[in-house]
Length: 429
Image 1 (cartoon, rainbow, N blue to C red):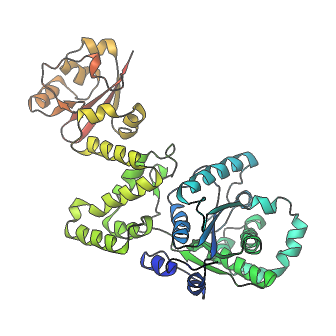
Image 2: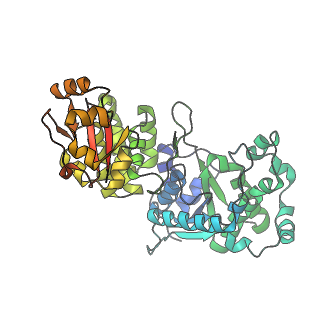
Image 3: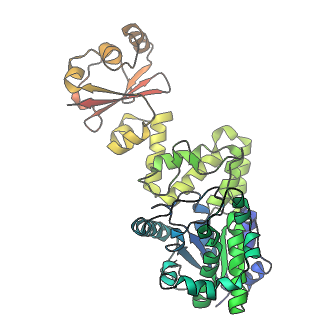
């Protein structure tokens, strides 16, 4: 199989990406090129940033010279993994599941190299080996090798016994264990990786491989990522931060990383980027010397946005941030697409006005009576006289005349009141 390029476990340890590890795993990875896998649950059409850690584990595995297999759970997705869940999960119909599997596969192909000669990544779907297996065969050939006592001792099961766990979810660890056994037997896969909540399912797999095949297998987990305040990582008030640009725009994605706490940024830059140790330590030191510059957050946001989307999406996100929070120009504003304008200014007050009314209004009437940007004509006048009102990033005076050529994308005006308050005007025809 050849020799690996570097010590993967050592690399992952300094990055804070190792929690539980089976004895002998590091020795196995240093001895020879090893095939390793991670399973992805197709519960949605897109993965979110919680799934980014396992994806990056596979990328690290491949970079170290080993062979990664990304397993999409087309069969186990029908059952539902109880690990880390407090209640029974809704089961998906076959059509939704197929759609989700296709979406997840497409995303994984962005990160892993499936065409390199030495250790190309591989995609697998456990539906391929479960679809023709009968229930009787499964309980006879697999179920008899693992005791109920063994299954009950797993944390993922223990935590659910009080609230109730169905036989379907209880059996999940056997299904995941069989995945590892099947990949070991047919692909020579010796390693499984995953989040800390998967440890019980993973050790069931190594046990099955030992009992059914008489082989040695290995596993390690990475800590579940949390915020420094203990709250769940990867969620905002609006919900998950998705990897799909249609579900979470590159601008929102970029803003998420830009706004992480200092303490979190120090951990996340090790986990979510491929910057080397020297670069990261230099960034951390520079950040600690001048935390107000948010050096770590800016670098983290750049690296992750470029990796998940692309450089152009990152550049647009930076431009959007400049427009919203700082030095943005009229020219930058005019270059934005309609979807980007709506995305950036999603949270600001929005008003509508007809084109006819816009063209027949004085600037004072427009800002007070017709759009309520200001509560009164007097206040609008005072703010304009104090040089505190901009339209499309240009300061205006009382003699400013509104016309159709000023409209962004032929339908928007951006009003800035003071330093930070924005109003988006949509002009109807």
